[in-house]
Image (cartoon, rainbow, N blue to C red; front, side, top):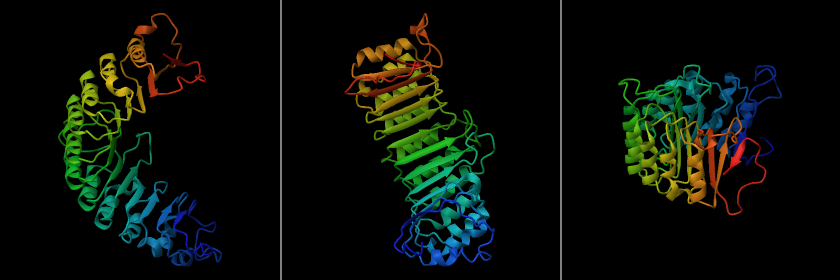
Length: 348
């Protein structure tokens, strides 16, 4: 850092000393090093962090526009004195260990925030997440310039999502990942339809959306009716019938990327997307209810579309046409299908 005074972007790696004390180690003078880095505006890394070393970055906090703590297991008390000095942050990535209290600190300080990502410490969802609708609503009230949100949690309400849609109308990306299957509004017990409906209604510039939680076909009707600019849509464990996907295909005519898993969509829903498939970059569907027959109909209707059926077992067995497909991957290609497909991939 001393030898690179014009450094603007630093990924720190491990943020700890061998002795465990910055003062005791004369070769580790992080405080003065950061104080001399007047050009630094982006910090990331912080693996194997020792929180007592965080005061070393205080001298550059006021200049930071991007801070990535997505590998740092910090509590709200450890985050608070750092984030209170980061008034110019535009990008902030963090683990959910900071809790709703940590996000409230962010909301009170980082009024220019554009990109917020809150990742789970436990990606399996087995342990309780410490962020919820409370943190999301606080962020929406304090950070009205938000354009991108990725938020992992286990508890959410329609009211919090509706508040975000009204307080942050400039949203381009909204990815809400409610971990656990079919999680309803934690207060009312109702589906999350109205929350996601408000996002597509009020955020007119939205281009990317990830939905989760308990959702009926009504949520997809909202998406098809109001999500006219959506280009990337991710859906998991949602909808009630083929009608949900049909709403999306009918309304989201600019769709480029579609990812779907564990939804009740069948052949009728898949075939309803035929007018869009040539314009899309790819479609990935897994654990749905469509058959090899439905996939083959798509392949025959669109010769320049590569349709790959990916199975855990042999797809050449008897009665394969009616077999429910494990995974479907479709993409457009000018050169035709690939020649290196493994045995468990069948190109129709």
